[in-house]
Amino acid sequence: AIKSTALMRLYMLFQFLRRSDVGIKLNQLDADYPNNNCILGFHKLEVEQPTFNLKVREFVNNNKIWHGISRNRDLKKPTWVVYELLRQIGVRPQKHCRGPKEHDPDPKDFMYATRYAFCKETLIKNRHRLQVDGIARGRHGRNDPLPSPLPHYTHEDGHVPFHAVDMSSAVGGVHYMPVVGVAMGGVAELPMHQSNHHMLAG
Image 1 (cartoon, one colour):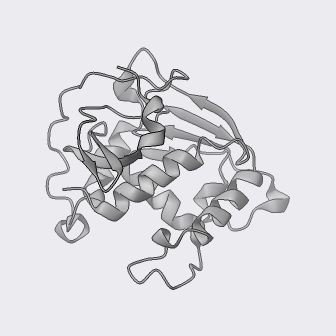
Image 2: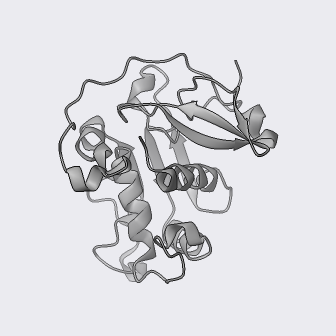
């Protein structure tokens, strides 16, 4: 099972990356090979720095769900938690693509790259960390076969943010969209408010 905190963070990050003010320059989808896109709906992402890095920091600092179990501690490296989550879904910064040197906050801040790309090998290597007790179990199960492709429901702007299975269940006024990420190793649920149903088309 996928950790509930990871699912909520993925959903929040999905929303964040579709904001117009965070420095996204290019959100490229591989339309010919849908399995070559990450669960957030892109194959390549190009961003403007330092805008993107600053917005990620603001995003994490203002949302306590990123702040650990107690959710009452500030993070010394707020961008690290986003980088780690992206790595778990197969997204990594491309080499030799850092932002302007004069604004570089830290050579080890991987959210200061200007280009990110989905890599299936990275996903298979790190997806276990999304699962309950996955970190404790380590690499066991990393090489499980990829799940069979599911019917695609397309975002109104042409993106395929998730592999949708069903939209039928609802809990406490919040609809849940069972989804399976490419090679995530199983079905998970991301919360979708009723007002966001237009994001998917049958």
